[in-house]
Image (cartoon, rainbow, N blue to C red; front, side, top):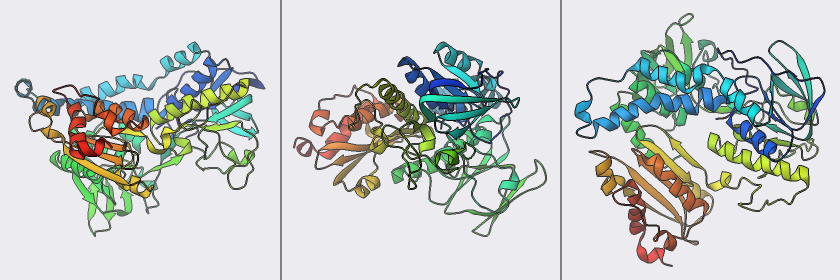
Length: 506
């Protein structure tokens, strides 16, 4: 997730005082949204010699730093370490207590710097970027108005480009009573200073699965409601293994069940969900994690021929395309991160940011562009080479295409699976290790299209898989990438052996 500079969601934190800009200030590049993605765009543009401004309405560092990637992983880490230690004799006997909930929350608060962005703002200044605090709206081609917290309005103009990096916000389904019941979104779930005794989670995607793991570990009685299974965009065994692990943690995972109505008993009272299986569920808090919507509702997109509340479609250089009405004029508007709906992941947004920043500089200075597949000025990996880790326990690490996605894309594939517990490194890692790996191979080109790992510590296997997919490394060459023994990486050898040496030497 990336910055939500245009989000209507409020934050309880106070940001530092706004920077001052004189009316009519002009920059080469203006980036709306100072999250991880926007920061990277601005940094690349500034390094390229362009004068650059960052506009942010909330905290510099954005969604990932304060309400998503960092705090969620801080909430998850302590439980993962504790469970891992309990699986290793010698370490297990040294554990004399249970998880310290207040210490976990305190560490989460430290991770987000107590919701203060002073250090992030200092980095922006040190990078030679002008920070403009306030809410940005388009007023025309290459022009913005920015309204700060005191109501002061500045007018900004870009000579070359404006980049929208405003991220996304939680989608609230149209369920009677839901909006009036003050449900949690990922923001409240990652920033809560207390643990509810009973928590319902609506949605079985990454946010739902991770927060179910965190809150079950921290003592909540968790109920997950998922219409289509957990992690449905992954290989089926991934969701199944995560579901089994959540049940072992004490969570109740209801698949194929949805809420039909929601109500809360007064302000801060219990939440009652009526379910479509005829039952009722009463909880203290309800987390809605059913999808995302773009933070483009109050950007003034209509002034430049685009629709408010819309995702911003881009080409591979991250340039916003005109759309059906063709009203957008020129090659000055870019969109990076969640808001372009290509890959809603911080690391992928930062990858897009590097490409966008570099292509803006090249176009501004009249330098040659490298826009072919895997060129310096394009985000080719967005299409079929996206890596992702879901920090449940077990972890789910995947890159590229699943078997279903590869077949849908028209590839002729062969898939192999392997039980990671059979790898020597697994027995060293933990007693009773449970894990699984799957490799999807393009039979015509003899290259890897996708890999999925599920198990303890598999996140650290993912980059090797990403290199194999992005590099389109032939299987007969992968045989020569010898994994160290005894490590979990030996699963690569076992996958290749399972595929078959004869097939891999074509």
